Length: 373
Image 1 (tube, rainbow, N blue to C red):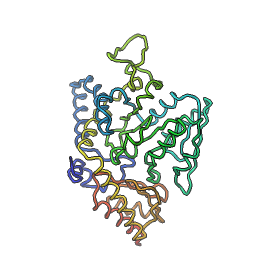
Image 2 (image 1 turned 90 degrees about the horizontal axis):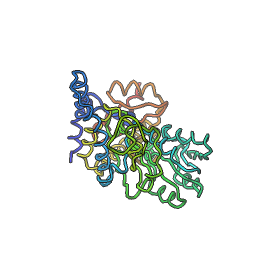
Image 3 (image 1 turned 135 degrees about the horizontal axis):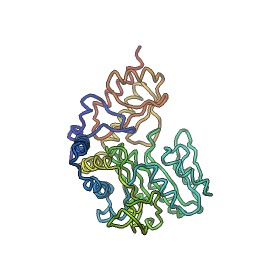
Image 4 (image 1 turned 180 degrees about the horizontal axis):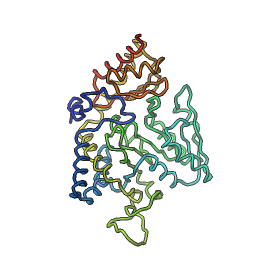
């Protein structure tokens, strides 16, 4: 297993930047960039093998199964490849029976709009408002009843770094017979997800953040008992059982989650495989401890120096701090080579396994220095 410093050596950008902007997108890992460059060269000089590229999404299912602790023999059965979280959510939305859908009002739009669109089809969509800026577990539980067919939630929400209590929500949805849809885009790759405790009916993840993949590689993981109800959003030549053909009918769905496979954008998947293999060289629980500690240290440093006001939230690898002078903060971060995101008066930073205590210190010092005339 790779140590944090060994992992860090795979990212040349870290020689120039303190990279705390992974909630938006990470820098490229060497293996990912090399795979993409090799593919581009083979394409440029007419030496490409499209069949090899076309196999990459299939191979990615096995890697994702290993990351999640799912038996590799179930990878092809339970995992569909897609282009985005929104596509995964829209696929599930189009597969639901009539009933109520419960979703936090401040959810990321890719995990909100696909459910809101169901209102036109007669579904009742219940938006649970935040209290004190955060979506409360008890409010989500209170919104559930026996009419509820699905609760949709992000494991971690990047607006404030709040981490959902997924085991509690699983227990609550079990109590009313509702499905649980989890968007793990802002957590998987940095935080450990206990699939046995959470048992999501559906897990969606777009790999271009903490999983280090190119944008366009996403997965929908479905519980075995929910596969039969899946209706493909985009039926295509990949939606049938192998061997795949190109022309004519009939249309017979695959009897696995592969019925929802998207026809792949090849280069996204060529880059996804080395990213997944790099993550598989890490100890997931060690990665989580590392990332949580760095985020906690950053919050503590900022609170102690009063350089900003850390937003209260359940602890995650994403920290959000209110600042009084965003323009000064933006200038100081750029001067000190710190990459992060300012959202109005909120500074958002995220810590991956490639970050270290020096990154915490430089970012906190930059924030403190922004107050100095």
